[in-house]
Length: 132
Image (tube, rainbow, N blue to C red; front, top):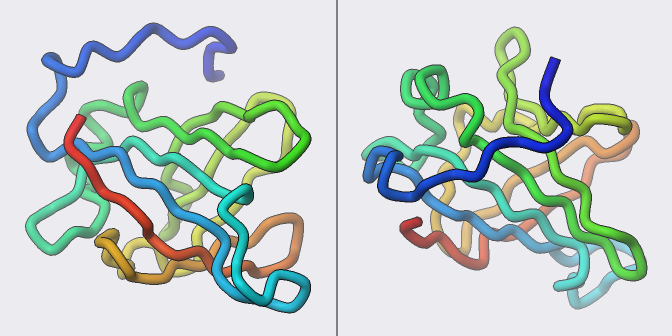
């Protein structure tokens, strides 16, 4: 069970491979220009190929966080979790959102990733990747 009030992350305590990744909704029906208000902030370790590093994730699970942002709603905070062969965003009181082929996705500026949100697939664009 994940804690509702997670411990603060001390940036100096994490390996240098940890990144803060911002992804924003890409162009889709209803959002012809995309939408910067529909976004996620992901804190996760990336390997040399800019993919999520499962070993470092395993060693630092509590630090692998998600913030889900939606216009007119409070931000939701959760964790990056590994389920079976895939990655998901887990929140305390909301169904998980599943990353589509996240194990193969490269988290670098300009790349696209897909997330299954409530049974609907949405595409997001990586707009920033920064060191913690």
